[in-house]
Image (cartoon, rainbow, N blue to C red; front, side, top):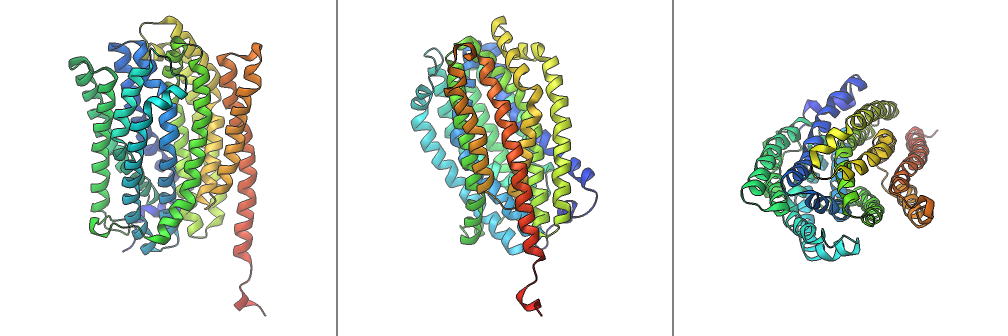
Amino acid sequence: MAVKNNSQQMLEGPLLKNIILYTIPIILTSILQLLFNAADLVVVGRFCGSISVAAVGATGSITSLIVNLFIGLSVGAGVTVAHGIGSREDETVHRTVHTALPMSIVCGLALTVLGVSMSETLLRWMGTPEDVLPLSAVYMKIYFAGITFAMIYNFCASILRAVGDTKSPLTFLTISGVVNVVLNLIFVTQLHMNVAGVALATTISQGVSAVAVIIVLMRRTDAARLMLNKLRFYGPQMQKIIRIGLPAGIQSSLFSISNVLIQSSVNSFGSVLMSGNSASQNIEGFVYVSLNAFHQTAVNFIGQNVGALKFDRVKKVLKICLACVTVTGLTLGLTLYACGETLLGIYITDSAEAIEWGMVRLGCIAIPYFVCGLMDVTTGALRGMGASVAPMIISVLGVCGVRIGWIYTIFQIPAFHTPQSLYLSYIFSWALTFLIELYAFHKIFAQQTSMLSRPRAADAP
């Protein structure tokens, strides 16, 4: 079985054009994915009030902390497939696909047990206010009950992106996004289920996208075709998925730990600020997923070219992705801030003070968000090269270390004990991590190209 020609867009042809055409569907797909949560917040904000908005928003950091560890494994699956395609190892691609799906199911079931049983405890550890806690706990339990659907989708979508297909996930999420919005309105406005209704709507819509992505993989005619009777854990491929994906998951989870600490600090300012913070965070998410799309592009373009030993294209991919992410980040950040009050008003209808706090966060984070994009693209480049531990260590020290250190030092000074001070910690951590990762990329690139240029023993005179 040969891989379809659409993968050649990564290995041949003009890079700028191919990168843009590849990335746009990822951006649109990610925005639709984010609209799941946006629809949740808009519906509860319109029909249930700012406390319900705060309840949904309070779960974000803690769910990310738990889920991201397992989502990282999907990155490992994608990189393994990309390397297999670049090196024309069809059997590697086949085995990776059939290892990834059962891994996603096991991860999902483990998350369900952990999330449902620990929801209230985790929220209390975060210092969630008592007026918000009951609704937050309900939302989390329902969300984790159906988390296996999200795991299946993320693993399978990562495989599709690795083989060059970014349009199918966009189609799936368009359909499931419509399902999510319709069910939100039915469950909340007609059945009066409050946050339980939006959580259930999200779970059902994720189930739709999970089924769709499996069907598309089963209908492929190349090495990435999924055959249910071939599902099993293939040792070498599982080991590579874990070797690359686990550090990525640990990195994301540790990011979330620092965000949990920041969310706990935000919680200390009360439910009004929490509401503005949650709405602003959701709006900023549209910038983040647009920037993160270039991270995914860097992973797969560089992954395939490393597999094909086309190192001359690797650096070009990084430079183009860094330029694109800067332009995209600045454009979106400035636009969202300019429209900030109007956008926040969509989420919050009963508190002018909450909208003011939302504008504070947008001012501190949305405009310089492109720096986060630079960091993420460089992380993706390192992972595409096959490096997994280096970006994890750099990110843990550069992002988590700075933020945690900030909270326990600068934030404790009375003059800097403000939400603005918390938000500034993000910018400093992004910039520092980007610079160190860029240096690490050049070192690893030099090592890999020098190993390639060394004469083999058989070639020695």
